[in-house]
Amino acid sequence: MKSWLQIGQVSKATGLTNRALRMYEKIGLLEPKTIGNNGYRYYSEEQVKTAISIKRFKGLGFSLNEIKSLLVIDSMMDTLKITSIMQNRLNKVKELQQDLADQEKQLKKIIIALKRKPKELNPLERRYIMGQFNNVSVVVTGTKDLGLTAQMISKNLSPEGPTVEIFHWNEFFKIPDKKPHIIVLPEKNLQEDKVKDIQPDIVVIKNISAYCSEQEKNYLKLFSAAGPHMTTVFNADDKSSVKLAANNIIQKGRIFYFSKRLELVDQIKKIGGVTLTGNEIKIFGFNLTKETLSFLLEKSSSPNGDGPLIASLAAVLDVGLNKNMLKLPKT
Image (cartoon, rainbow, N blue to C red; front, side):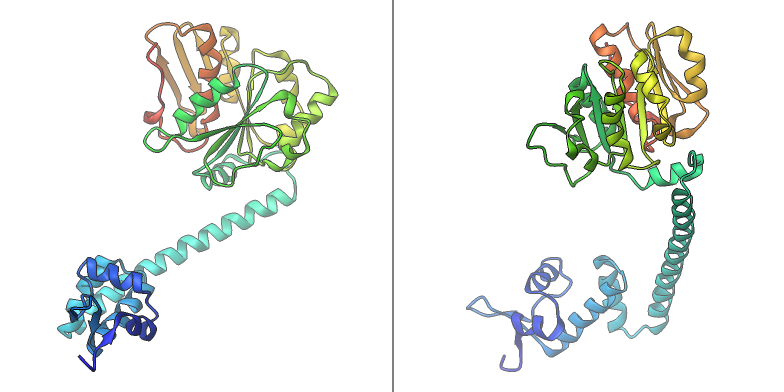
């Protein structure tokens, strides 16, 4: 045992941490030669070489299971098999390089487009940007049913995973770093300076108390910092909201509407959004496609739940959700 090395010495010789070496022992990847009565782990010089090989293979991107197979092949000196495995890894690296090169070209085009400040991004550019936001931030603002709307959006965004966290704005509010999240922002708080730092991906405006230049200025704080990739959802049944939607800055981004008025269905079909007439919900522009999605509720939902329901569906129109994941209440 005098020529054997303790775990700390192996760690120093290989650059692997004690924790990593213990994990490799646990999964049977690299077990110590022996464990003394004192509980110390002892490794041979040959095992140090194996540990270095593990580190090298891991650096090349192989999984631990793949490394197990590689070590067996390596011990048998099967050069042909090792060459074949390395060639497959090289092919994957080349594929990744091509994907990254394609992404680089796309990003450069979008950055140039953004710097030119066009009236609006084209659908493919907008879809690409939104595709980078698997975890989006959503702001729900206005004067009514904000909390209920946020709860419904949370259910839409987390059908198979953890519940998306909802934050309510207050005077001590700290903008969350981690996405996804939803911020409930009452209209009265829009005047606060910190609002411009939110940079949301989606803003849902449920309703506006009254339209005026000062109120418009407050709402624009949400848009000026975020840029034209942002999606805004407006209540088409609220005249003040529709007037705000005509603002040139907001028009540069994606806009969807939601409504319970039958006479607006054809118009929203052209623009994109969600309608509810009777017990039929229609969704136009889901994932920026021309497909119309229709759902029948078992019976008409309660008046308090109508607005938040269709607003929550409009909020997730272009975040890349699978249409089968939409959760409609059984009312």
